[in-house]
Length: 129
Image (cartoon, rainbow, N blue to C red; front, top):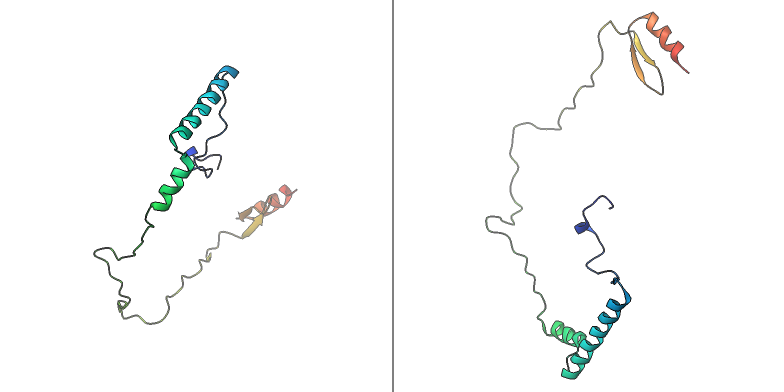
């Protein structure tokens, strides 16, 4: 996954640890967070509780599977009769029928090489390691 775009990550939308430039900014952020929580308590608003109540009050999702317009669920469409019966004929395996190639030699690491003359066959056998 290291070559993929960051949007394709499987980690979700969780944010990492917040890093501050200096301790003064960290102190200020902590103070603002505490003040915000005190303000919520003062007005009787608990964010987690509010979120939970909202989720429980929502209606459950209803799924209905229907066929799109223009399509049908019929399974009785017959195949077209072309007049041929039986299986399809397999393709013939190609074979060399000429007289120029004497055979196939092996050079390095299973490298198949066509041999056209006796001299080539001798030179290929000398090139082996």
